Amino acid sequence: MQYFNKDQAVRTTVKKPSTLIEFLNEAYPDSPRTRIKKLLKSGAIKINDRPVTLHSWSLKSGDIVEISSRSGITAKSSLPFPVLYDDQNIIVIDKPAGISTSSTDGSRSIQEIVSLVLKTLSKGKERAHVVHRLDKEVSGVLMFAKSHEVMNIIKDHWDQTEKHYYALVEGFPEKEEDTIKSWLIEDKSQKVHSTFERPEAKYSETHYKIIRRLNTYTLLDVNTKTGRKNQIRVHLSDIGCPIVGDRKYGASEDYLRQIRLYAYHLSFPHPVTGKIITIESPLPKGFLSLKEKDEHYK
Image (cartoon, rainbow, N blue to C red):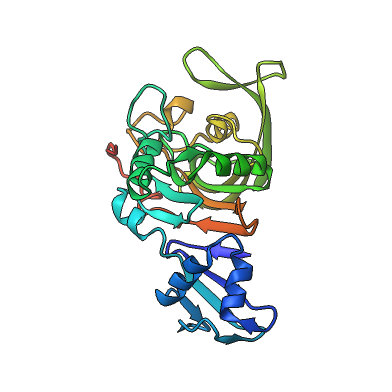
């Protein structure tokens, strides 16, 4: 397994003796040899925590090879939000609340912002293609493909993707852990409801587990088997525990609050290498802080 974090580093354990260049060619068969040599010269590769630039370096079983991805540095400095991972095929960012993943009416969106940067850096060769979405009010880990072909590959294997969210809800769920299942339908006011099985309704499934209780609130770990619009928000409201700040689905209206739903974990097979990429982001600062006053965010 390859594991990425905000520092964009991947650590791999060597399974058989080889030279470093042989190891890199096998690990990245689709990367040009010149690209791999540039990676070596850049000092982005460490072996057992020691920087190595020699392509003929001898590796033995058990060695730890660490590669820091440098490809995202320019994008990282050009975007107004954190870049969690970036390579020639995909880019993953930490989406802020208050802005849509994409739009059809010309309004500003995350997709538009990322696309503009990618087009500039690639001289028009790349743009951000939507793979999945987070609601406008929701923040967290969000991935885009850099080409239409890569987007289709990811979508074809989406059932192998695992997504987890932090949700701070009002009250306490009756069960420590449970799966909520229902059929969802959207009404004319664009509000989603659980309903009975019928052709126009979409089956949805949400699993939650209690992390901890805080006064009159509960912090949950939530993951979804399906990815329907507003699914988590509707399902948690259905069990009498609406997400803090989510007035649309029954949360308290005493104060205007940012919705406390954060996508913190995304695990998926890389569209080119097939290796499992796991990206995580920590609980945002202030996520658990609820003061008796309105909150203001974009």
